[in-house]
Length: 318
Image (cartoon, rainbow, N blue to C red; front, top):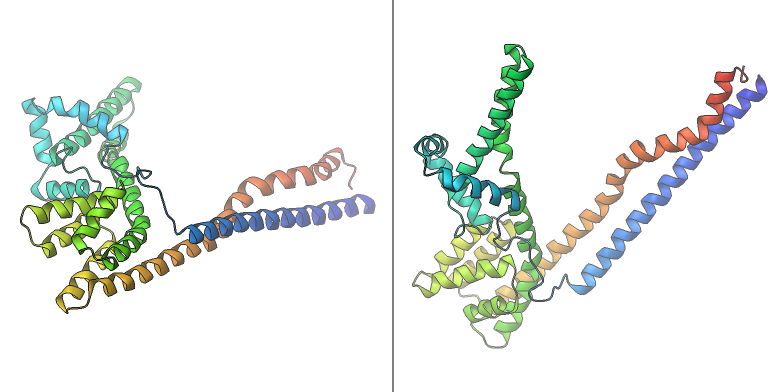
């Protein structure tokens, strides 16, 4: 009995030690990989070749595109247009228009079409839930779950659009320091600010270049540059872009040379980018703890404690 107990204690101690060793190795490797990627990103300046960025360039997500494709013909039906009218209040249309602008889709789809896609999704889920409950003769109490499913389908149908907006904003946030560097060089070489922006739009095909192009188009049709740039910051919905535009406009207002303003902005944006990358690198080991505890530790304990459990089942331990 004492020998079996000793074997059990040794197995438990060995399992704990092996688990701690494996966890330490995995965390060290994850941290090393993230730090290597961090160093590469900082050394390369997060530079990308022209035309390589495709995130958020104004293409509808596939699921939303299909829903809009199915819902658009139904808008010709009076009953469906009436349902869409109930859901598409003026404030709802304004919110959807702002979402589409942030997704770069304001010229490709109308807010009413997106609301129609939401209504179609809710109707489909509602019909399915109703048929399922009637077929299996569920009690009336379950009809509340069907109503909840319809509401969830209406709201969750916007997940592809929300993900698209987040990816686009992430791309803009990542590309802004690169744009500031190019603007500094171009303005320092004698270009005007508008020409420097046009140069960036010619060299790159990313969401930030798209927003700059929209601002340039607004300026060319006669809008004031302050208004065009302010609208650009509102469309992008990115805090860094808003700070970028605000700093430039304040520099123009107080007579600060644009080259100096851009140089200071470039340094600040690079510092913020490096801080974000380092923050993500520090979070990686913490995020690894949960998968290790859930997936790796049980397997290790099963392997190490298996012999002890078998001895207990056979009655050999005590």
